[in-house]
Image 1 (cartoon, rainbow, N blue to C red):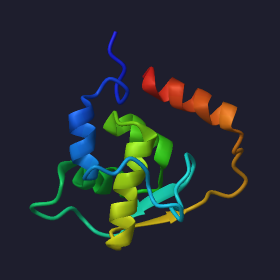
Image 2 (image 1 turned 90 degrees about the vertical axis):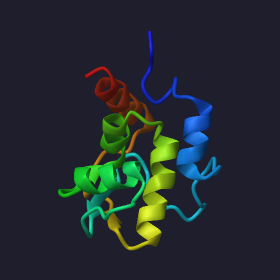
Image 3 (image 1 turned 180 degrees about the horizontal axis):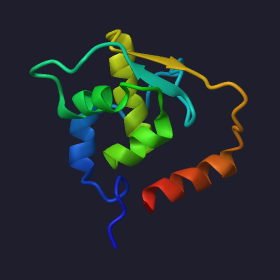
Length: 114
């Protein structure tokens, strides 16, 4: 059985991130960070970046983006960092959200099973 985001070709994931395996240490993204597009996709943009901008017309959690893109959260965070650095998205933490890693992992598993 295939697991989206986990069984992707390592070559594809390497290409998506330009060889990066981790986002910068000052990366503001965690699983529940809400991401909002600050612009529309542009011609020539990497398809995953364009997809993120379309998915974040309204505030969307990082974990939801990863599930929709069928990518590991770590790869999604790298792509989000690129967009943040370019001023194409903004990030904010929701108020009053439970950030228990076990609960968040269960949410991610549930989203993958949809």
